[in-house]
Image (cartoon, rainbow, N blue to C red):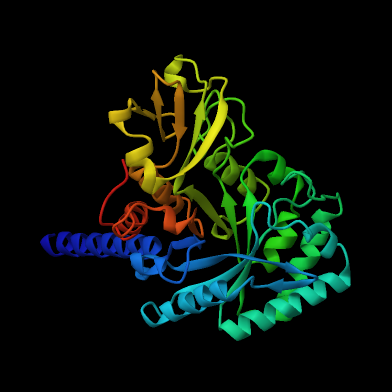
Length: 372
């Protein structure tokens, strides 16, 4: 009887050990994807071993070809690639476009020749820089994005054709990703999800700016969960995509290293969900100066959205952002949901030294801290 008990106890310990190792492996495999809009020097402020993918932002179209704008950008890309010496598993990607940076995308990708020439130029640049892949940040196919930029119903199928052409030209070893709006109109109208993600490695869900510079009411611009007053959220986007058959392991959720500030906000509900006027985009590193308690800001936590915000009742100023608590919860969510990763815009806006928000992601990913 004693031997049976000892054997059973031993087997239970073995099973528990396997589960712990599996969980730790899943955490460490979570991709940490940094969009990078800095120069060749700023990257040295951060521990590159806390990042799995860095995406240079941005390249643009020159005619039908992917183009690096100037010598400064060339130097930055080369510096990012050199960081592989410190982190051999680091993936360096080039991103096309960005907000306001894809004016000609609809026209260029509307033709087979345009798509072929673009794909060939992507391969040339990746080979030249010895980079690992391309990220498409077209805002947005088939729906209105940057004011005045062309968008057509055909963009939806043309985007699929573009990704197929890129895969054909780049082969199976180069990475292909794209930045996707995290809001319902984009999710439902811009992408042929199953067709695109058969060829693309992952999608960077821009689950930030869900309250944006165009919004006339305050709210959370990057909440983890929907609330009774705001549908758009990380969980809403992930739930929608998985409900239509997209693998969670193709999804990277977005976090924000910046806040959005609104003024003319009435002192009702601490400024949350009130009529307002957009005022400013503020990098996280400037919060101690711009949104300080000394200047009258009071900080709050919305436990329904799992999101922070602050409000100044004297000036009627409201701000929505990520902090270490929400960042930890987002990282845990990505691990628990077995997502591809967590990405953020953008690295140089993190608080120095070292990057407070990046460090939070890293510590949750490696089991050093827990999210609460």
